[in-house]
Image 1: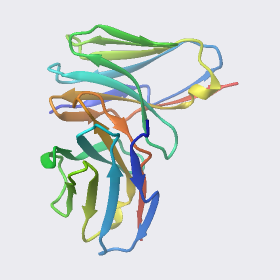
Image 2: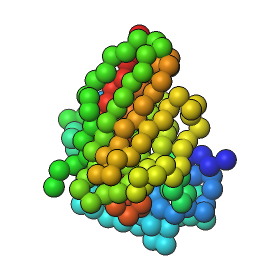
Image 3: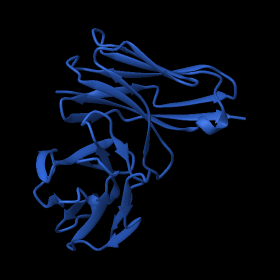
Image 4: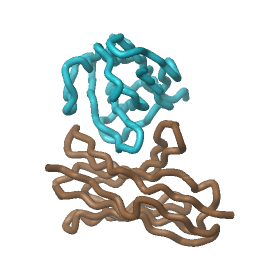
Length: 110
Length: 111
């Protein structure tokens, strides 16, 4: 069964800290992996997409890495800001089957 | 460029009724995906439409159905509503079936 888990479930950090969010998947035969953020009661905003052939992607203060052999992806957020507070979801694509993790709820305190 | 739009924003129905949710994809996107996000649960894949055809469906009963129109907009229909159908329903579109762009969602409340 294709499952995606995320650790930690929740995280609270002071502003300015660098942090790492983790995503694990059971089936390594992925097509791609995408990181999203979701604000309360809202839709998802795409942050980064990593193709199965890639090792990492960067956008501004965000860096996502992918290690298919170990079934893991990490999202690194540098110099966190209160505006980064949201739930972060990873989604693994197996062909046209998308499996989402439960998310990590991040609070960045001013 | 306009993003994915969904209507209505909120929908309140009673048990046994039918609900219809609508989604307009980004211009040029031919694929539409529907997801259910119940309170405290992760996103669950519902349906995928591409070029007017249903291509895949998640583990949901047949009372969840939909369609895609020639202009690639889509409708999700939920028949015989149950209390546990209360959730945020998200629509996403894609032009390459790789990257998905999400709409703001429709909050369905079943009383």
